[in-house]
Length: 463
Image 1 (tube, rainbow, N blue to C red):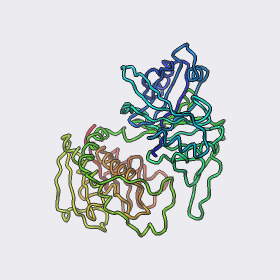
Image 2: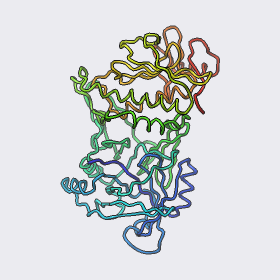
Image 3: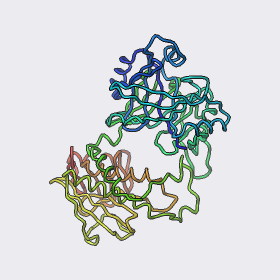
Image 4: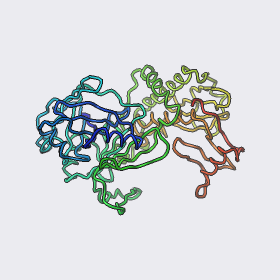
């Protein structure tokens, strides 16, 4: 049974004013439509399924759902989406809950379309603040705006966190290693659910570490949501009782416009190569024997296909030309421990650095780099053993980030007497000893033209 965080319900008095507040904070919001019970909503969402629902009474009638919304302000409930609501209902009954029978629900959008679902209240009634409700979408919503909010995590302070933890575990959510009854990961999704108060982390023995902090700067907001947007920097705002923290994501890069074409090519090229889940969900430690084990190395060929999809998207967009070259003629700056089986060089407009994609060990390892000789910016998988496997989603995202980086232009690498600083999508990594701020200064000096020796830089491929 698949389950994931679906949406947070926030009651407001005036939808138009709420819509304006969230938009003013940089969060795209749009009218969602009207429900048969008399409520109306605004949706704060992006291209992924999870979202925030702002809801208000749109009728003077009286019924349990409408009366609950009319008398409330701020976050009042949240929903867990399941692929089979009957199976989820049975799982909750087996776990000691007494959920109501599933009932149909719907919403008519401003364009006149009808979106339908089944819904199941788990506790005392509609929009309960103690437990989430279940929803199974029978008419899936299309993706939201491409520049909309992608929900990354939600933190709530329920009356009984352990009861919520029981519910999430019954639905298949994966508890964290360090806070096994407070932090939960979706079985197949990116949203992290935190139940406050966290308490003390669980010690995992020698070699483990955690970071935690207490809220010394005032009372906790009952609900907080972190979202990513195609923006620069970070921001936070309290909107209708919800602390919303915003951070930048890959959509801020111009090359992200190629991702739909990459996805299309990838779906066509991958054949029967399958995705696989993270074998260590919630940060669970690998077994000792996994460090010397490679169960299915051939599955990593999926990463080579993703690289091929990027190359196809780049050339199809007219941004460059691709050529397979003799692997023996390619000079890599980093020492190579494996022999390349296929190398493709993609050349763009004058001023850009060539992108070099190397496939190694029967195309189960991928390297993405720039320049001649080639500075390697990303290598996946890290080593190929079972212990270091993060699941296909994380590895494919790393390949995507490498292409976004190389196509974004700017300074890639700065070298000086055995030390180097290599830019990453959201920071840098390097080799050698650096004083505080020195590595960042290297990159800044190179970008400003104050440093030219040992610098690999190029123009953006698209803007």
